[in-house]
Image 1 (cartoon, rainbow, N blue to C red):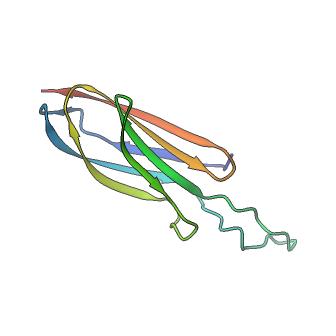
Image 2: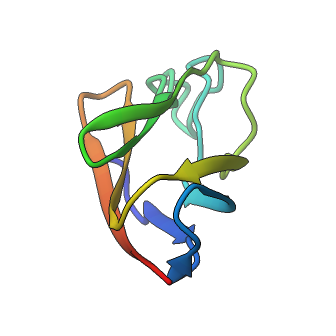
Amino acid sequence: MAKGVKPRVKVPKKAAAGGTITIKTLISHKMESGQRKDDDGNVIPRSIINRFTCDFNGENVVDVTLEPAISTNPYFEFEATVPEAGEFKFTWYDDDGSVYETAKKIAIE
């Protein structure tokens, strides 16, 4: 598991039924390409976030496959329609097998 990884998400607390909201996500992650060497000349193993998903009440909203050229601390901003109150679940997958998750609830006004 990479050190210092911290997912952050901004989701409005309320939305109109059937309304569209903007969701912003950022995950702090160093993203090692596997091409650099440490001070002793050893290759630093590749460690990147290779996939990001967002589900709402168990239904997929976003599913992104990331490639090695992705920047450090990947940021995503996207829109989602909110048909009902529920929970958004955000998941980031790391090359080393680590999975980082967070969730945010949203109410209908």
